[in-house]
Image 1 (cartoon, rainbow, N blue to C red):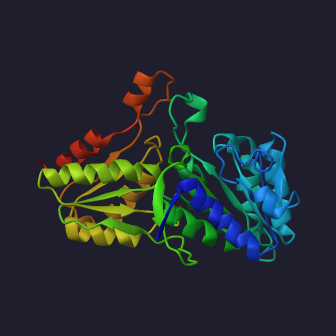
Image 2 (cartoon, rainbow, N blue to C red):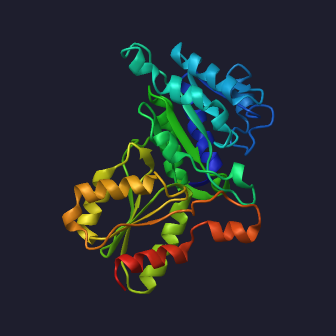
Image 3 (cartoon, rainbow, N blue to C red):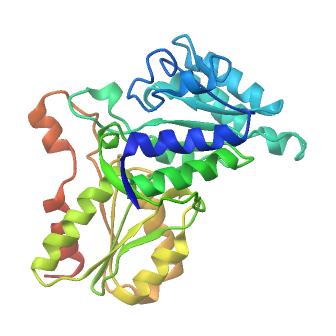
Length: 325
């Protein structure tokens, strides 16, 4: 194993795949000359040239559409959004073209494309730059939606996403790019749709994904100090969702808390809560509890940002609620 930054794990995934497949290209704002807004694509222009590492105008609809068309005609584009907040400008290309083309063509046209970039809050960026759209894209048949929480998963899942013949939404976190973690020395991939048991436990099941796994991990440590054993599941992807992994854990613990950064209405956590009451209702000793962001836009003031985002204390309190303690 060796230690790399989160941004380096993503870069390595793209580089390794591009070295063996000339059809892979990277497009986006500042990905070439500037080495990427978050330096994820550092050095890639020098290695692969301007025909494969392509700077675009500030036009998500335009370069998103070019990417979809390129994928339909034999290339495997990686489209980088400076933030998924900006993907809304080009969401028609994702939802109405990339996601639907295979079905509309009766399986004749594949769209092997990856849309990737940061999601969620990243400090004092205000209401229009701090949003989570995982549930928006997960609502769309034809898409796969991946949200890695660590360096090893980011590299292995992105390599799989690039090789996939279907469009994949790959959602990162701006706050994680400098995070360090271990990755295998050998070449590897990870399956999309298979959750990871981050920590085994017996009293309650915690479920999360992406950067909020850090809060979930801190909560399991705090709970352990109080004698509460929490099993922590990292979903890794939110379409498809590994319902079986969550259900099997609940069969053991009989209680569940789901943590995510998004707003509460029609969220990933509400989907999991519904599916678990269908799959393992008889095993539940308490209603499933959700910990989400409040149902308001993100503010700018630091005090309001701190009040807005769920924290370890809130997760611990939710666990104690389902434990009736």
